[in-house]
Image (cartoon, rainbow, N blue to C red; front, top):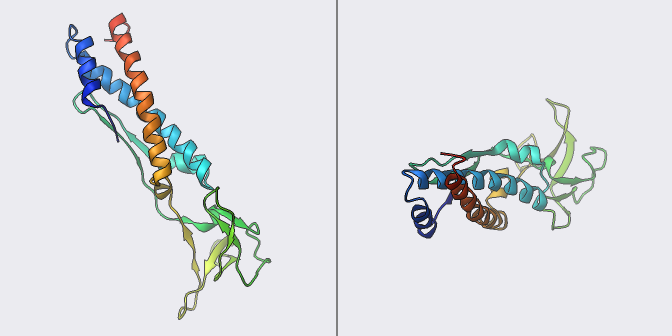
Length: 188
């Protein structure tokens, strides 16, 4: 959530007091630009910290923009579970490489891949594509193993704090720009 504090709101009102309804418009524009920048920063940070593609992260993020009546923008990520095969899995999803310790798996880039006992790689019966499976005691068929979802990655403290910090910094400089544009008469 990106929003302005009372100091920024009062500053915009003081500078634009001679133009009616200009302060909320300038603030809403600045918030929307900061939200768009926050989306880009979130995508970059998630792909920097986790084994995930930018395209996959981008597809899950939606930005709800601010309006002059509601000076808040939201960056939301919604998605379902992600198969573990989309993380770093070694050997590279080859069903012929079966070991007792299981394949090497890592979801975060800063951690080294570790054996995942009880898992194995095999082709799926319906699709024929390789998946990471695990056996559950008492059940006949193995189950596909899932890892972190993209909203969980974006919701981690490291990513969330980084995105908020960058968005607020961009909001502060963008608010100055939007006020200058209105004062110069470029935008009404």
